[in-house]
Amino acid sequence: SKDAVDYIIPHQASRALPLVMDKLGVGKDKYLNIVSDYGNMVSVAVPFGLAYALDHGYVKEGDTIFIDTGSSCVNLVKYIGHVSCMIITNSLRVAYMAKDYPGLQLLMLPGSLRRETMSFVGLETVEQLRIYNIDQAFMAATGVSLQKGMTNASAYEYNIKKEVLERSRIKNLMVDHSKFGKTALYTFGDFQDFDCLITDTCPPEDYVEMLGKNHVKLLY
Image (cartoon, rainbow, N blue to C red; front, side):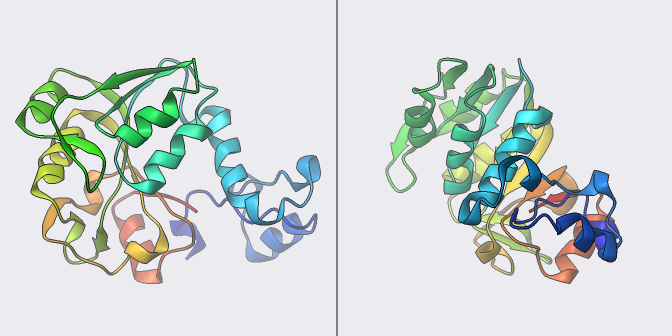
């Protein structure tokens, strides 16, 4: 139901958006409406909307954030490039993108290079994480299952993800719609371990209900 959704970032295509939301019973504080300011942005509307939401306080100045190795997480860098914050990561792709934004401080975790994900992994990666206090983590998953929770296929990544969950104050999961209903070998977290799920479209109703039951914010 709509009450299980914390915030909606809809396609910004029409000035009739408030009328539609009103008919759906969605309050003005529950959705983003910037079409009157920026016009119809066609296919970039949802990424722009997410960037706008981040620009207005989701990631704050001075935050220490962890960014995971998944493609959705890597793309987050360009949306927070204007925010002066510290990024902790084991991802070479995140580091490469962050180099273009002087306001982003980068702390690269040590380890052995895993070429499949272009990330550093190993015992030293986990040990280094144990000395940090993280404000927000933005994490990826290979699969999200009602029965098995958040899963990934690599034992190397599993240990890192578990430690990040332990060290982070706010935990965000970033996955696209293709990950729902899938299960990989290792479960690194469950629904109650996360504060927010960020995705590209509304998940199936049973997932929305599970998120609401566990007080997990839903952004899509």
